[in-house]
Length: 314
Image (cartoon, rainbow, N blue to C red; front, side):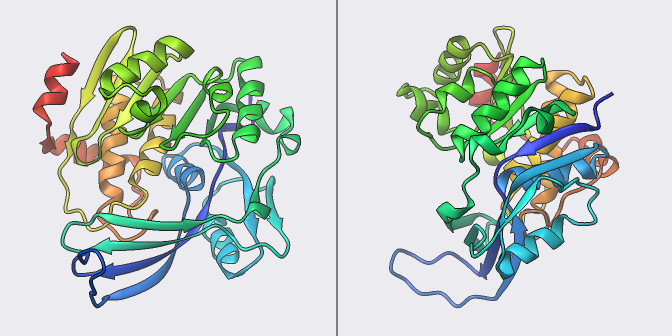
């Protein structure tokens, strides 16, 4: 029996949130309402969501030794996440972001930076780090390192989920070992050069052979392709105050669905519900809910459907 249900290899970040009544026009001015530190990051936040859903979880990554790094580590302690292979990089600033949140819509604009001293090297990923889990979740930033982790997982028949929204050099070597691809709606188009995201997603899946190829669609939910068929899951309606971290939480819930053997539609619905609930509070992890809260939202069945996506899925 593996020690962990899921191990995540990838980014964390400590954000500075800046709340404004509305986002100004280019070169304009707008007074801000508040500012605050908020821990986040793609894989770290996904692992917090997994832990909240009751999974035995481990996080592998690098953290700076500055104030933002301290905030990040403290945010992960007490969550139940194993941090044995989190490296504290001396004399290195943690990844940071300034996130401007438009209070009129809840949408955010991100300005981020990650020092090269945080880079995770492939040699720092050993088989023992990966093989003691039932599932591996990665992003794409330190491409060579997450590629090694994915290759180890594939060799040991451990399923791999990946969160990617940017084209990384050499990412094709990662994709060949991915079982569950969940991208932004822009990534398939950027990766393939095919203007239609549906056709682009099909192209990626058929080239690399992953079991599921999926896209998140923001306020319209998510769509996934498995066994040659698309499945569309509309978004849940909530009072959105901040969309930061919604995709990260979606991925954490998706990991839960895979490990629990849920159907594709049920996995997408749960992931959409968890992402929506996170949008009801400020911060990348401000509204991470438990399974009971997600099921309660799903039971209300208030959905926002994009008819075009729905028809194309059919």
